[in-house]
Each structure stands twice: as structure tokens, then as C-alpha cells.
Image 1 (cartoon, rainbow, N blue to C red):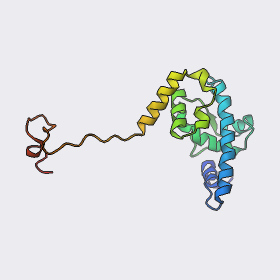
Image 2 (tube, rainbow, N blue to C red):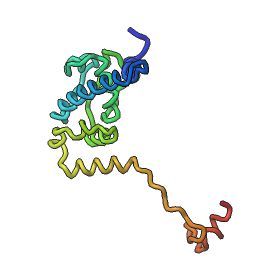
Image 3 (tube, rainbow, N blue to C red):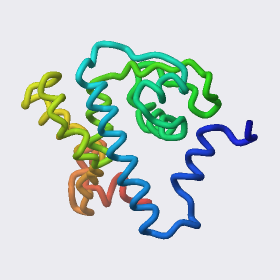
Image 4 (cartoon, rainbow, N blue to C red):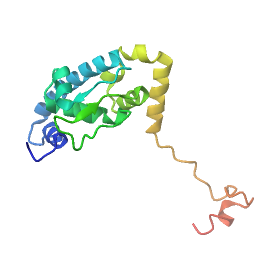
Length: 171
């Protein structure tokens, strides 16, 4: 077995800098189709926790082990109990028990509309819930700056003085 972990092997293959832009685009387009197919099967029965070794899951979904490692890397943040992806081997027992809301939000965060728009979500969440989750995820990435305190505004400490004469004196 190679000295590199499966995850390192996957990442060096998926982010190979020696490949041309076209080759990488083809690699990822193919991977996204495979990923979509696996999610369609998982979301068809969302309450059943799929378990097995990395090799068994790869065979179950008709994929090679490296593609399954990539899938496990992608879904890991959405799992109820994360898998040990950094150290896993083909024989590591893994679980695909995912948190539905977390998975949906992570798909939105990844801008993976081909995943968060899958028809299987209709049976899991009603349209209103999907919209709420979508808005929550989009808002979580928005940085809002507080209103700047002007020199002549009342001091936020509540002293009743102008900011420039109170807390803003040494700024």
C-alpha cells in the first residue's frame, strides 16, 4: 500500500496541477455526475443509515475506491458522526448517516444546485423549509458591518456625552 493516505491520493488526483484545464473540467464533470447519482440513492431513503467499508460502499454504488473517497470527503461535514477520512483505508468502516438540514445547507454553500435541487428533497422538506434553509445558509456567509459611530453621535456606553468627548477621545 502507498504511504499516502487514501484522502491524500484522492486530493492529488482531483487537484492535479499537471493536468490541463480541459482535463480537470472533464474529471470534475464526470465526478459531479457520479456524486449526483449517489445522492439520488441516499436521498430516496434518507432515514436509512448506509454503513460499510470504503471498498464495500464503492462496490455498492458501482464506483472505484478513489471516487468513493472523494464522495466521503465531500459529505463528511454533513454527517451526524464524521468518518475518519484523514486516516481511512479501504477496510475502514464508514457510515453515511447524514443530518438532512446540514447536508442541504452544505450543498447550498458549495453552490451545487444540481444537488440541492434534486427532486428527492421534495419528499424530505416542503418548499417553505427548503427556502428557509437556503436563506439561512446564504445569510450565514454575509458579513454585515455595524453602523459606524459618528464623532457627534451619543456615546454607545450610555454616558449621555458625545462620542468624541467620551469613549472616542483616545481614538
